[in-house]
Length: 79
Image (cartoon, rainbow, N blue to C red; front, side):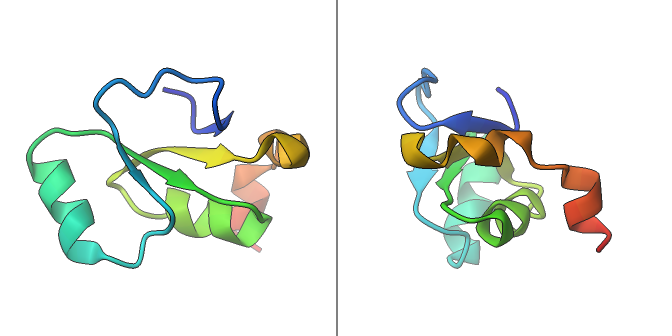
């Protein structure tokens, strides 16, 4: 799975789809069971927050914010 994708353009198979990464127990359970986690995000900060979690396989951004696909994740991480 790509790190960032436009929602609706990626086959998520059995991935767990979340709106944020606030529920650590759900993230941990999915990770321990081997289930990939996809998280929706609509800002650069939300993308960075989701990708900072090792359990998250991909972040889904809205079609209207396709520009988030071009984020420099290294720069975002080490600002």
